[in-house]
Image 1 (cartoon, helix red, strand yellow):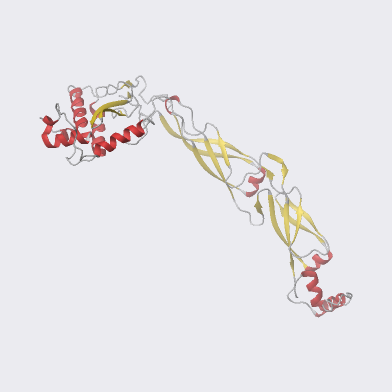
Image 2 (spheres, rainbow, N blue to C red):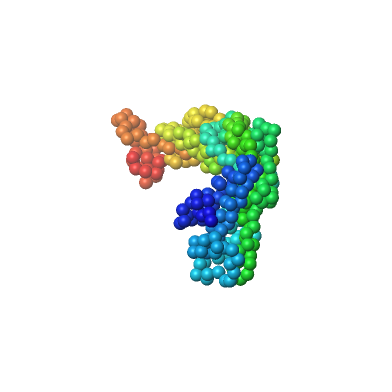
Length: 374
């Protein structure tokens, strides 16, 4: 009698995954729909018989002990010491009804399948994120093969119904346990659950029915986007298999920093440094905003770290570009570290104009004006 291990081309200590891979490889090679050589069908049946005996831990144990004679007409309770088969059986019952095969993988769906969604990370300049723009990007995604029109078969041919499962995509195996006989349903190893065999695959897509291409897309970036904003482009993901609808493309925005301007939501922040004379007397200075340079009025007597607001010079609200936030300007006052004798005389003259008992020197004057000692 032929040795089942030799038929599958594996060693006697091969694990379940090795057995499965060997069987699938040989089953595809000798499948009657693919191999038309004389004797291929008999070889295919021999391979299936060998795998059926070795795939089940109970029958494999009997085969290892008694050979093929131990498989025919064997009755009685299985060895309670061998719980490996029980684990697979219980996994089948508790997971199989959810659409999973005994190995824990998801059984392939035979009908049209939704295409996968794709992610694209896009860096956007600070001002472009505020006012919006259009960007052209290139994305690699899967499209239906134009040569085979998604069938995966060479033009002029087509998929054939798998003779192993009869097109169902599943095979059944009876298992005897201490609790009775149970039927175990698994993905067909010949067609991988597709129910069809492609004997002559398309050379363009390798029988997949889809191929990867780089596509140019023009993306509309709305005003007001920020880091973390996610834009959805419908139907620009991977194409669905077997005529299924394509997935979507999700563009994740990351906004670049600006050296002068900071942003928090719809509010813009910046700083301006003025001299102590500008703070005392008031002035008009030019500052940078997202709209360009504008004039900012510094009121007389402005205190250090005062915040001045420019209304409607901030970020447009996402989805409502008419409504904009404000631009908040923090005023920093520069105090001189040294003054000339002439400047000191003028400041002391100014200090003498104050009658407040707490202000009797230029030092006290600076303290009141700027909240700190000169």
